[in-house]
Length: 114
Image 1: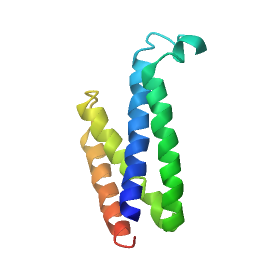
Image 2: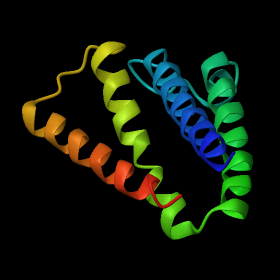
Image 3: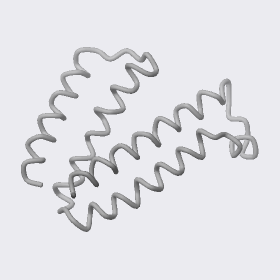
Image 4: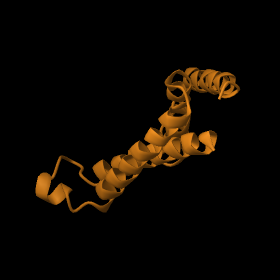
C-alpha cells in the first residue's frame, strides 16, 4: 500500500507540473495578469493535482521513513523528462538520459528497502 501511495503522490505532482506548463504556454508572450490567469483551467488543474499530491504525500510519510520516501520522489525527474520529450518535443541529450538511468537505478535500490 505504501508503494501505491508513493507512486500516486509522484503522479499527482507530475500532473500538476504538466498542467502548470500548459497554463503558461497559453500566457505567451507574457503574464496576462492575476484576474485573467485565474480563469485558466490548466492552472486550476495544477492546483488541484498539487494539493491532492500533498495530501497523499502526508499519508506516505505516515507509513515510510522520510529517508526512504523522499528520494523516491526523484521518479518525478524521470516522468517529467519523458513528458518533456514526448509531449512538448523537448530535446533530451545522451547525458540527460544517463542521468535518468542513474536515477532509476537509485530508486530501484531504495525501493528494495521500502
